[in-house]
Length: 207
Image (tube, rainbow, N blue to C red; front, side, top):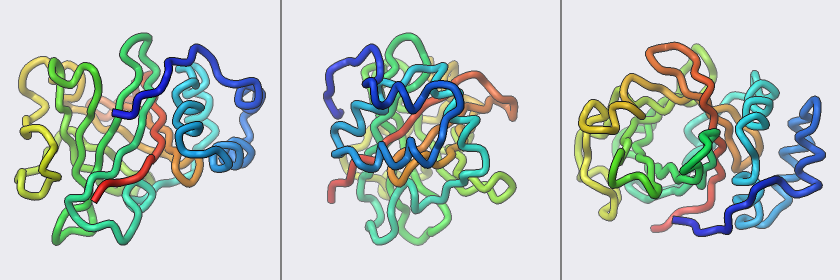
């Protein structure tokens, strides 16, 4: 887990970019100009109401699998995205992704965070949705084989098992592009929009 101090509010410069109408090009330039750890800190200072505004401002800014795991990274190599969701508690988390040997049309991944032992691991299959032009993080599906995953990832569980069914079951998260390394997501349960948002910041990979 990426350990950063909890921040209650965005910096003055970032707050100014999030007031009123959001200029996504300006926000993207600001985020891309920050060192990685400062970028994660900035993303994790953005509250739920601001995330909803960013989602709306990013309409039409599609995503591809290469935005999540860059091309050239080998299968089963972990790529970590630091996350901040719009929930009032336990809002810091990570989504961890990898490419899959023999498949160019999907990524595997799971959710890492302080609640993972209780309600996780929240495995998913990430696919490009051509009807939306956005990557969908699909919790209806989970990786079928642990051999396709990084060795340090937890045991695969379906999202209908245990307490995690209340969080991940029957859900797809769609992603829109904010900047080169930052995406904004919104949850859809059984095809219906939920007022749950999250930001992801790609931090790098280990391999």
